[in-house]
Amino acid sequence: MTNHRDYYEVLDVPRGASPEEIRTKFRRLALEYHPDRNSDPGAQDKFKEVNEAYQVLSDPQKRAEYDRFGRVGVGAGGGAGRGFEGHDPFGGFGDIFDTFFGGFATSTRRAPQVGGDIQTAITLSFEEAVFGVEREIEVRRVEPCGRCGGKAAEPGHSPVQCTHCRGSGQVRRVQRSAFGQFAQIGPCPQCNGEGKIITNPCSQCSGSGRERRGRKIRVNIPPGVEEGNQVRLVGEGDSGSHGGPPGDLYIGLRVQPHEIFQRRDHEILYELPINFAQAALGDEMEVPTLDGPETLRVPEGTQAGTVFRIKGRGVPYAVKGKRGDHLVVVNVVTPRSLDENQRRLLEELAQTLSNGSKEDKGWLGKIKDTLGLDS
Ligand SMILES: [Zn+2]
Ligand SMILES: [Zn+2]
Image (cartoon, rainbow, N blue to C red; front, top):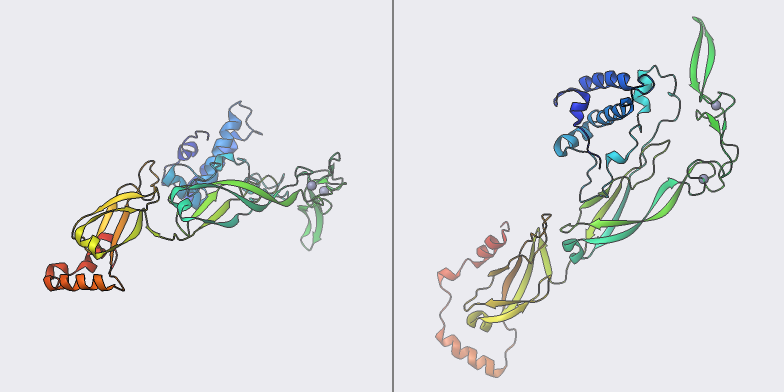
């Protein structure tokens, strides 16, 4: 990424400048530095800089993004790193300049067009969503033709200058009306305003210069993504036409549920079934986590719904090294069938036990509190 000067500084306008102010200032500076009018060695760079600043500040969405992040083209969730700077600074410039310089030279030439965005989706396993993954996906997108390199002519043949318009792409038509004679300038019908004619169209793309093809793209899915998130790869969409920049690729994410774990933001929930002897007497148990089994000491007198927190075994945060916790929710399982001996022992035990006291009530509320659930 090239370091650029502050766009507001480049255009010499205050940060709160109105669109009108920005436009006026841009016109003045563009006129001053336009390579056709200014032969200073630095003029061209200056002109590009002014144009780049204007492209961002004249677009409300890009301007808002620039105000927030100090740059434009930062994709959500770690894009490909190709941003605005990679685009042709003259892309999309035609229309502004045309109206400005009288619309003579290029107004009917085909203006650069941004390529289309592509939407696709991938399904991740629970673990891939938690820890991140590198995936290769295949998309079909429009690219410059592989045979003619986008030139539209069969290799070995060059387009020839249109004789009708002598390469200008436009023709002057004289019309007569009640008010007299006037000239009208329009696109050349012979070459469709291109200024050149392809005598031998490329056999692969039939002279369009573009073709749709499958392309494998590596995607880095960052850790901690969730169902419904979207990853944007800037510049990986359909290629633009007439020198316009490519569109973007959007990848929707689906996440498969886990067999034993649930996820809540950066925490992993696991339900640990124990019998009431373990609950009453305490026990040392092995519990599964995303990083493998961990030993957990369930203390004497553990109640159903008690939550144990294993630190740092949950979902990674964007900050490197920081992770959420693994929560173990105790479920005391009552036996569904007893053999004779167990029944006798329990009955004996029952004689000695009282009903739960008032303090033992309210565990449901306790679980909800611990887990932060809404009631
Ligand atoms: Zn071709
Ligand atoms: Zn022509």
